[in-house]
Length: 321
Picture 1 (spheres, helix red, strand yellow):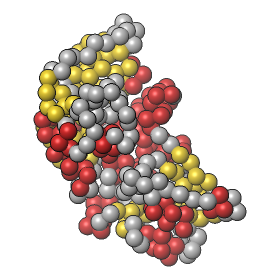
Picture 2: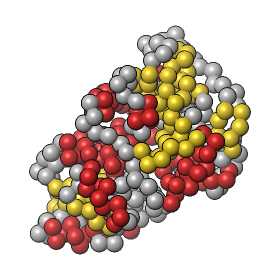
Picture 3: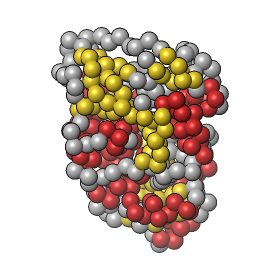
Picture 4: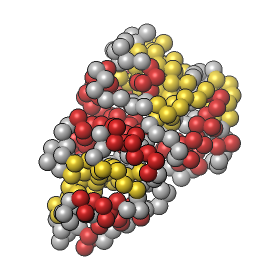
């Protein structure tokens, strides 16, 4: 089968389109014919070696949409089922295997292209909003990197939940209309958001801030996080660690929560099925969507990575297999 592998860490040119052996499944796994894989920023970090120290050859990719072609004995799935999944050993390939706990059936009404945009960003966003951040309708929230996949999803889910004020940040103000069309009330750049949040909340600050950027953005977030507020930290796309002092939180009764979908997939996969069921229903009913910025052929995975790294896109980038 065809796949994209890498034999070293580095720039996008380390990604090689080649032939590899089709995976063999155990009784707890299924084999999926991949239709589309999404490209996530975590793939970029893994390719560079800043996220994983895997054994080569390495295949990247966190999630897929596709059709089951083989099932293990203990699986309740059937051949022909249309699914989304978090596969074992990457997703940039024609066939992938996945543990049955990380495979979720989708309805015929949901196109495989739109389904491929969902798994990582929609399940993560739902967990962040409703379980980690525990956002209330009366809250003012800040969503960083709002034009990206997770940001796009968080804005829509917050709007759907009736959150009072949704403030979004973007790297380039040209993305303002895109984010406002998703449901944001105010869009700021990283340079000005702390001041604008305080101005728009009469110096009260935000109740919950979702931060996947880290670095200086984390420090600025604490400047506009209100009393008893929560900073949810779930990534560091800036490549820099976000820092804060204990005095930043104890006297103001604020708290910082961390979350990783990768950790949850590995250690508590049983938590994902009910969330996947909820977001699949939302997508199937078109209550939320994820705009697809561009679709690349599998052989052009390097170009997909270059687009992600440019940050000059809105929504999700997909690979068609």
